[in-house]
Image (cartoon, rainbow, N blue to C red):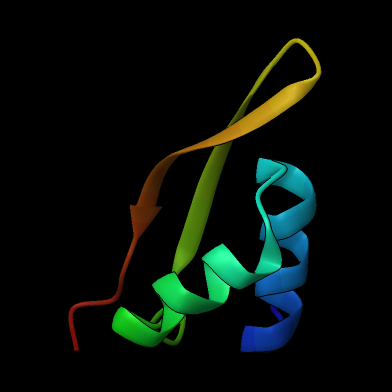
Length: 56
């Protein structure tokens, strides 16, 4: 569990994407509270393969 900003920082490292790109994406659609992001590792890289969001 963590805050939105920490999630963006972690995603920047895992997905190897520019922070500005993820911030722009987050402005359009924030990660909902209690969401679970699922990543898969392929070699040296991670990619998001799924996300579970609460039904509330």
